[in-house]
Image (cartoon, rainbow over all chains, first blue to last red; front, top):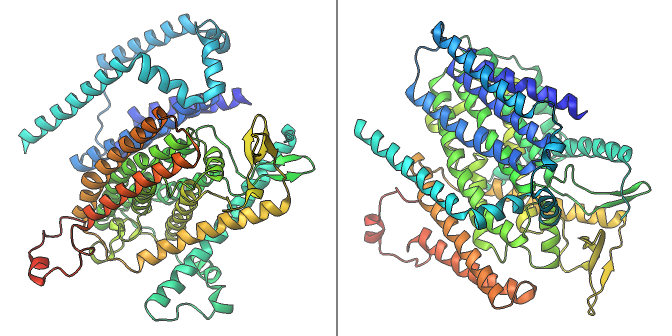
Length: 174
Length: 419
């Protein structure tokens, strides 16, 4: 059952991804991207990472994609159906690079059972205990706000700088 | 508590899905009827009272009419997205209900059946995730119609829903902090033992209420379909059953938001001042409380408690549905910039400050050695009441509460850029 569901989600992830680059209409591309991201959330659920799945839908499908939608609408791309698929050398390069990434991932993780992979991870038992005791949210929140609080805050400042920079750049144009 | 066997669990889940879906659809039908009758009452009219007793069969007649009406199909619309829009609009409204517990567990010969369609470990986060998808249906409907009014309506809807989602999510954080959990069943159990969250988290409730009105696109936040400026906004080009789906989606959103408010802030299916309906998960079993000596009292499940708690839940939900209707026919519509101002410059900072306030209060009480019990709840209630009062005073800024402002001052008051 889980295997069937995994293949359903895997096919929609890859199909959505192909749809994003292949469709001529930016809004159609965007909807394909939403399908793809939502299917990734489905795979997270199959891996019992419910919290990540919820966050995936909330942040990516819900927030970021809606912002993309705004950009598409506000830029008002008139040339909806222009043939802008990249061909030639670029396409070859893209295939080579993505093929190489697939190959590396396959040699590293291919064939290994995910459960075996998880058990080889140091601290898996402690994580299981924490999960049973406090639930998935605490499992992620504790390390994030205790051990790694400084990197976490620095990431926040980095994002803030990026936002301020984007606003400053956009203001100049007006 | 005896567990269900896997087969029984499957059958029970299927039955629950069917029952909840049917009940929700019937509730939507009668919400439209209630809306029309109540609006008529507010405006001193009669409303639909011809089909059946008190007009109770009117929704069926409306549904029939919508099915047999001609379906127009705009020539310039993008066909695929035009059909997809209403579907994507109705889906999130209906599936959110899956994580809301609607009654006490029901004892059956095959085991105890939880009265919730899916008790997900991520409860509230699931609701936030699904409600963030609701914007696609409205946006796609507006965009694919290829009509300027529909497009503007869709744009407004997406801007508004994104803005108020932030306030909605932040107003839920104090609830999660207080419950110490994100599943709705645990939140109900926590409220059964202590106070309903509307008291210790009154400002959170107020912020959630306002955001929920904005998320459901109901007046005074119905920018996306403002009739006086946009014809009917995003569903201008829709007719017959496709229009009906947008319509059903709106009422489904209203009912789900009402049920959510009842669950999060009014104790869900809890009946106040009665310990007989307390079913708190404790060490693998269900208990109804503790004796004075601190021993757990095992809970007595019965079909009557289930029915009574279901009634309590429906009563609370109905209260919020009526509140929705009442507000719609009482308040005028905001201007678009006012909606954005309220969302980003009032709701967001207030919600952030409130999260800090509740967090700090819980921390201080913890340090003082109070981490539960009546003292804890009362202290939080007092802090929240002060915060709510200050928020109300800020929103009002001397317009209603101080009352008798001289006419000249009212005319000179800051122009309407403030809510």
